[in-house]
Image (cartoon, rainbow, N blue to C red):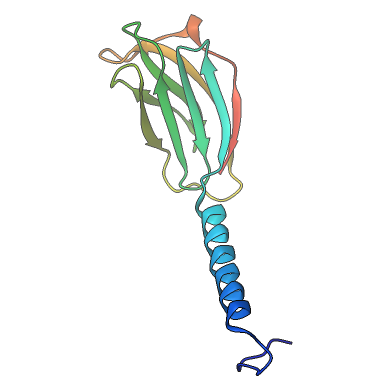
Length: 134
């Protein structure tokens, strides 16, 4: 049982310590709750990658190589093939969305290189399939 009033035997140092611990515990819990959790990840031999974040239903597509190629994630979502491109250059990432997916919805995706200006995918560069769950 917790006391709601100040007792004569409780020192001010003990009260300050108790309050400080309560604030610290609350702050630590907030950090854990706000930290994004990555789900599935796919890559193309170090040249590009994509990481699925169920919290927010987003796919982060990144280009890791200054090779003149764009990075594209291919997935079959909601009954159709969808392609999420990152065309902003090496060393950067782009957040992409498949909309608000139902909780527990699963799909597979893979990462490929391509030419973003013509939407040509270089199929021979595609990495393995990764499974994601919303």
